[in-house]
Amino acid sequence: MKKAILKFLIYFPIFLIGNLISNILFKPQINFLTAFSTAFGVSLGIATVELYITKKSKEV
Image 1 (spheres, helix red, strand yellow):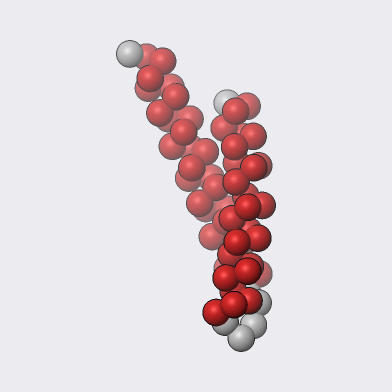
Image 2 (tube, rainbow, N blue to C red; image 1 turned 135 degrees about the vertical axis):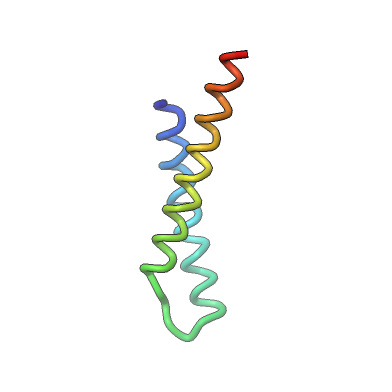
């Protein structure tokens, strides 16, 4: 469980910064809420899938 939380905390700033950069490049204004929600969702999804896969592989 701790490993999944650490993965989330690593992925979140990476995706947040990437989304903010793409907002700056392709849109006239910076939309922080969209960048935040996208980074949060993607990071949480990656951490959840990794946790699920790890638990399933330990069962077999």
